[in-house]
Amino acid sequence: MRDTMKCFCRKKRWKKGILCGVAALLAVYLCLCLSMRLTARDTALDPEECMLYYIVNVDGMKGLGHSILMLVDQDGCGTVYSFNGMQRSLWESLLGQSGVGKMSMGIMSAQETAAFLRTGDLKLDGDQLSGNYDVALYRPISPEEYRAIAEQAAPYWEAQERFADLYEKWVYEQDEGKKAEYEQDLEQLSREESLPLYRIYTYNCDDAARGMAAPADPILQEYTRHLRRMTPSGNLKAFGKMAEDWGVMTLGRQSLAERIMMFLMIL
Image 1 (cartoon, rainbow, N blue to C red):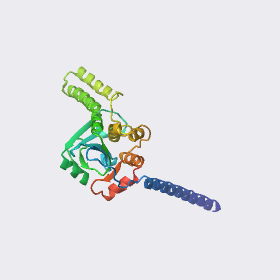
Image 2 (cartoon, one colour):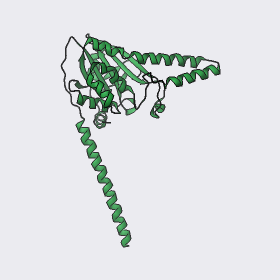
Image 3 (cartoon, rainbow, N blue to C red):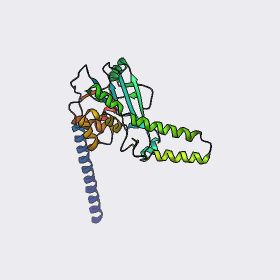
Image 4 (cartoon, rainbow, N blue to C red):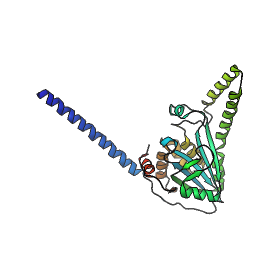
């Protein structure tokens, strides 16, 4: 009986220790979340310059988040860039397989751009070019920087054109031997390191958005090289804390779930 009671007390202390440890870890995590919290702030604007927006849809991409980049010219017209996986399914991407991605682009009038920044509702044709976006970092850029950023999309389009050409040949080829060759070529393309391949854990929509914007900001270049987080929300918040010359804004009204997700995403 005495041995049974000792065993029961040890188990009780062990469970209590585990609960205290979990509570301590949770408290530390919540403190980190608080330290990473962004609040709205303005930045210096010049009507003669263009604008750069780095924007996140907190609950996009099945809750993982999705990042886009928007350039606004001197007339107020916005051009949106969105990078996503094309060659692989979501399940294959989650298993870590690389593949050629798709860089979608959409153009809005000045009125449509202003409405998007006010509501967060993006309504363009193209992959991840529709949806409700939540938070943006923004800063003015020169017309020269605008052009330099836009030119960053060229390698993505070249890669997807190569993929589309091979894929069309594979689909319509009747000869089984040739078809197998095209299939091998498609697989080889998914491993070609010279291409900006989509890798959900190491080079995704957020990496592409930051990489395109990097020519306009040395701090962003440094962040992208050395301080990358895993999620779009985590990256936007971590970079926003570093880059105090960027403005911070919310787009439209966030739901309670979106606010909780934005608060908790720090990885």
